[in-house]
Amino acid sequence: MPTATVRIPEEKRDVLKIIASVEKTGVKEILCGLIDEYVERHRETLELLSKPQWVEVISKGREEIKKGIKGKPLGRLAD
Image 1 (cartoon, one colour):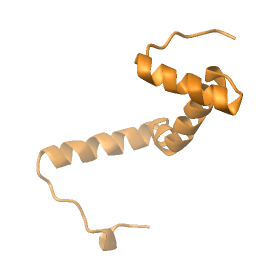
Image 2 (spheres, rainbow, N blue to C red):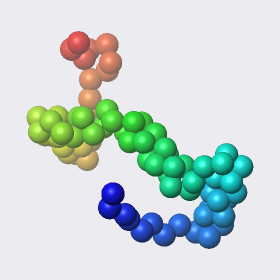
Image 3 (spheres, rainbow, N blue to C red):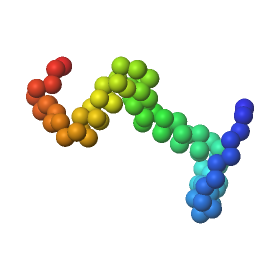
């Protein structure tokens, strides 16, 4: 498996080492679990951004917001 070097503050590294010791696991396993949780929390965003038509819609909406164009209230949005 390829490796990556990540620089984190020393105090956070030390806390991870303590937790790993208490849980009788490795820092690597803790970090992999945290990465999995982070990716899962952002899965919907990743799926939206993987569809070019949604990226276009989002970009258009952002431009409208910058121009001060008001959006529709939730009750008027199509299902």
